[in-house]
Length: 289
Image 1 (cartoon, rainbow, N blue to C red):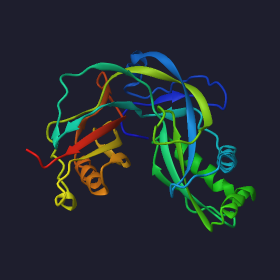
Image 2: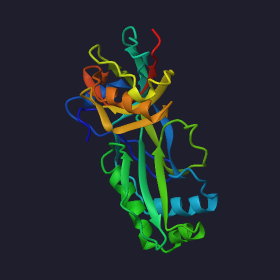
Image 3: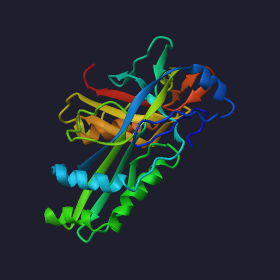
C-alpha cells in the first residue's frame, strides 16, 4: 500500500461494476466528503512486441484472451493513485504555478508488464516495468501471464513467426487513450471510479535544475523530455513508476530522470490528507542564454 490515506475502491467485474469504499483512518471521512460524483471507466489491455514489430490481430487476441481468462481483479479493487495534474518545468528552471486550485480527479490504474513467450510454450520471468501500486493487482496480472504455460496454444505464436523467443509488453490502463499506441485494446473490466476534489501535486522551491548532458554539447541543440511518475503521499517521486513518454535523445532522458530523482513535491491532497498522484513533467534543455 502506498503511504498516506488516499485509497479509492471500486468493485470491478467483466461487466458493469458496483462501487464500494473502504474506510481508512484517519482520512476516510475527509475523502468521503470530497467525493462529488463518479465516472464510468474501462480498464484496457494493450499487447505490443517490444522490438517494435507488428503483431497480427489474431495473435494479439489469442494471447490477451489467454492472459485475461486467468486474471481476476482484487475485490474490492483498491486504487490509491489519482490522475495526472499539471506540473511544469522550463529551460532548466521550475515554472511556478500561482496558488493552489481545487480540481476534480479520478483514481488511475496504470501498469506495464514485460515478458517473453518461448517457442516451447514457456514464459520468461515477468517483469513489472511500471507498477500500478494497487494492492494485489500487479501480482494477479503476473500470475495471468505466467499461466500461459498451462496452455499449448500460445506457443503457436512464436512458432508462426519463426522465433525462439517473442518479447512482449502488456499495458493495463484506465487512463486516456495513448496516441503512441496504435493497436486495439481488450477490455479487462469496467467500473465506476469516484471523482474527488483535491489539490494537485506541485514542485517545491528547492529542486536542483537538470544538467545539460555532456553527450549533447557538441551539437548544442535544444532538447525536450516528458516524464510520467507517481508522486506518493510523502511528496516523493516513486522512481519505479517512472516512464519516459518522449525524449529528444536517450542522453536528455537520462539527465531529466536524474534530476527528477532529486525533486521534492508538495503532494496532492484532499484537505489535510495527502494522496498519491500521477504527474507528467516536461523538461526543456538549451545552451542558449
